[in-house]
Length: 398
Image 1 (cartoon, rainbow, N blue to C red):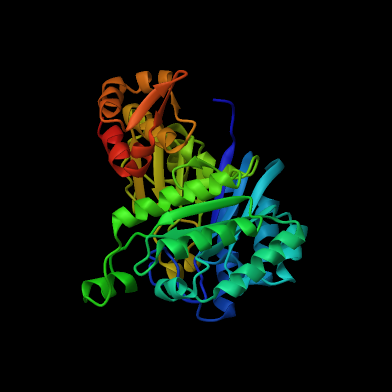
Image 2 (cartoon, helix red, strand yellow; image 1 turned 90 degrees about the vertical axis):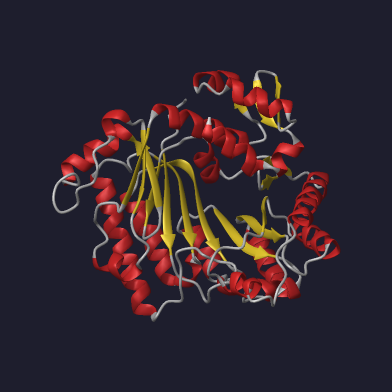
C-alpha cells in the first residue's frame, strides 16, 4: 500500500447533555476550568506521541466526541496546539464534530481560519418527535438553520442521521432524508439505532415503556436511504456512509483500509504496527513494573490499544501506558483487513482474500448470496450489506 501516513483522532468527552442512546465516553463538564484543564492534558499527550516519533506524517486529523464545539474558544487553542505538535501533510483533512446547539456564526469562521476544513453535524433527524425520543437538545428548525450557516460559510460539512427509532415512520424518515439532501451537505452517515446497555433508551425498553426497534423496519429505512440519496447523486461508499463525488471522509476511510491511527484522550483507540508499539513500550518501560504489559510483539503484526475512559484521572496523568493492548497476528490482521474492505462498496481485492486464506469463506458467503465476485474483487450484495454483521463476523472467524 502507498504510504498513507497516520490518522490522528482527538477525543473531546464533553456534551451539553447525554443523549438517550449514547454510551460513548462523554459527559457534561463541571465548569469551564475543567475543559481548559482537559485541553492542556490533550496537548501534553500529543507532545508525548510526537516525541515517540508517531506524528511526523499525519494525513488526517479528526476532533470527535462528545461535542468538540462545546469547548468554544478553547477548541481554537486545541486545534492550534495539535497543529503545532503534529506534522500534517499539505491539504490534510481536518474535521470537527459539532451539534446544532453549539455551532455559532462566530465559531465556524474562526475554525476555518485555524485550519479546519470540514465539520460533521449531528442532526440525527428532522422530526422533532424523533429528536425528543433520542434525547437530543435541538429541534429540526435549529438543525436546518445551522446547516444553512455551514453551507453559507463555504465550510465542507457532513450530517449524521439515525433511523429505526421507536415511533419513527417511513414518512418521517423520507422527510428527514429529503431535508438532509436539501441542506447541500457533501456527506451523510446513516445509522440504524442501536440500543446500548444501561442507556436511558435501554432502561425505557427494559421497563416496558417503549417498544424495541424493529430490525425489519430499520432495514427498510436503510434501503430507502440508499434510494433517496443515490437519486440525489449522493452515493453509498461504505456500509453506513454516503457522499457526493469527492466528499468521502478521508479520516474514516483510513480506519477501513488499515491505515495506522493514534487516538488522543480517554477512551480513544489507537492501532500501530507491532514493531512500532514494541519500540515505544520498551523505551517507556511499559513491560516492566508497575505496568507489566504483556510483550507480544514478537508474534504480532499490529497492536490495538487505548487508555481508560475516566476524565479526572486522565487530566491528572495524560501521559501513561495503555490500559488495554491487543496483539494481532498476521492471520488476524488479514481477516480484519478483508472484513473492513467488505464494508466499502468498492470491496476487497481477491489477492488480499487469498493471502488471508479466506477463499473458502467467501465462496460459502457467495453461495448464500451475501457476497459476489466481479472484476477481481469481492463485494457484499445488497442482502449482504443489510446483513453486514453476519458477513463480518464470519470473515473474522475464518
